[in-house]
Amino acid sequence: MEKPLYSIRMHGSLVGGHLSGAERLAPAEDLEALAASLVRRALGHQRGRADRIRLTLEAVPAAAVRTGCLPELTTVRVADYRQGRDLARRLLIQGGVSAVAAETAMAWIVRGAAPDGRSMRGAMLVDAVSGERLEPDQARGVRVSRMDLAPAAEKVLRQRLAERGLDNDHVREALVLAAKVLSGPGVLAELCWSDDPRYTAGYVALPELGYRRFAHLKPAGDERGGRAFFVRRDGLDVNDLIQYLETAVLLITEVGRVNGEIDMEA
Ligand code: WAQ
Ligand code: MG
Image (cartoon, rainbow, N blue to C red; front, side):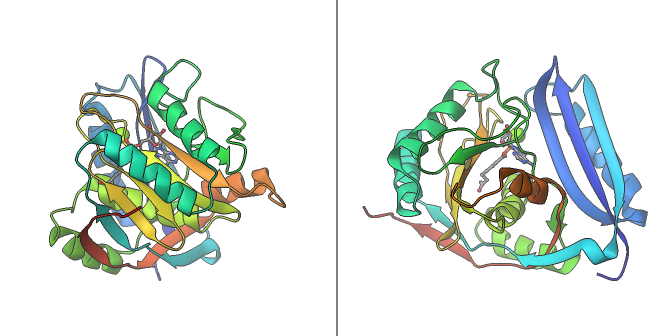
């Protein structure tokens, strides 16, 4: 990218709880329009209208921008959220996460992983062996930021997703976030499902198998969602990882394949 980039981040909350967030990278001339669209988003969220919106815009030094690629996307066929969670758990175990860690993280997301039983603003950092939570603040969590698609990559991704009927903000943003998470030192896997009551989909992302999405990881109407980043704890500096996820600048210039639906065998 030739043009200097800015990081633009939005966080909207409602009566003190997390409502809506977004993080983008854009050249100066796009910031006004982008800011307007992010404000619109915080005011028009499915779960309500934000009563506090924070926008942060910061120039990022050109030398700090790294480039990366998206994981391959595959949809796993599931009948309902129970089957979705069962297959997601199996995938995590296949990726090296212990059964207890996978189950503990899922149980946290189900009951609302913030101390007040609502959704966290960011993600849990979970020890992939013990299931212990390592993030310093259990309400805020770890907020992955300063990542986006380069314009050419966005165009290719939208075409590929549209062919599968998947070109929406949730999928695009989750793919970009998963790409950054998987590139983090010590990260084994990510588990996520949306906090939007009408959006029941979620995914497991693994370095080898890529982004495996499930149309159902929760029942419709449930306002709780969340994310868990499973980490190999030996040799890991948790603060370094958090620093990387929150502040390293990642511009996606290469898009992975977008596959059709598969049946997952045991
Ligand atoms: N960093 C860390 N955690 C985050 C971030 C972030 N930047 N953004 C959201 N979260 C956490 C937070 O706890 C939210 O409550 C939770 O994730 C869900 O966020 O069809 O829409 O933005 O393939 O509701 C995945 C499936 C959709 C997409 C994910 O997440 C598909 C989604 P949401
Ligand atoms: Mg949401």
